[in-house]
Length: 296
Image (cartoon, rainbow, N blue to C red; front, side):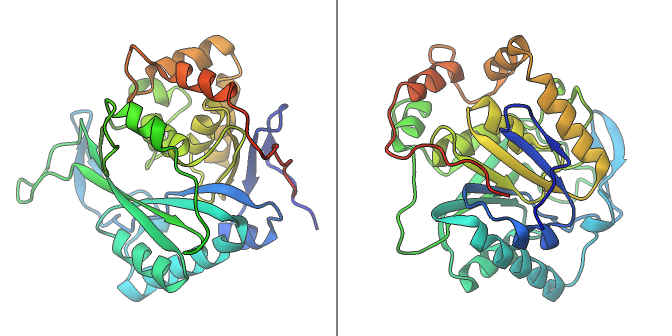
């Protein structure tokens, strides 16, 4: 039985499916160029943090409640195993995490035959302060980059990443801001990632019109970054609230003025050569392989 999107944009470049990723992934027929995954970090331990000057709970939901190490590893093995057939042979996957889950993710990747390419450390320029004053302030997240096959070469936009880093080789420590207020116009997901991080990941590892999958879509930041960067997107999520948020965010950037404004605001690009300049250059570069339509 074919899948029916919860939401699909008129240009077919933004697609949302509702359901449990463990059930939806085996039903996907299409093969993707890239996957970004932000799986549960399992850090909702009833603790407290500070956000916008207010004391808030760190709890995100029952899906993020900490389990024992065996449960976390089994969970990561399961979704990463189901993900492999969804990737093209030369496809790559980016997975974000913290100390609570990233080691488990790395172990599962190795067991399942992926090849880890890099571990990017995202240093937040504006992390929340440490509430307890008993630990070093948590100011980083890790993003694992792996390819499906150890023997099949992957795509890496070396030249662009070098230009973004002042004509020096891009390093594996990225200093970028956390989510900005203008990214919350349609509401906020508790683990929402900033467009600055997702845009860089996408440009580093895909060509224009590439298909990108997010099995834990949340507010669909991956999809918004993909569409703003002239890529295509499928997101999976179980909760209607967040699917609707993703839909609203996509409809928001259908206004060309809003889309252009957001591209200009995304951090990590110099005023001299903004994101739109890179995208214009890409559109003039011929590629050997024409875009493949989505197959449900």
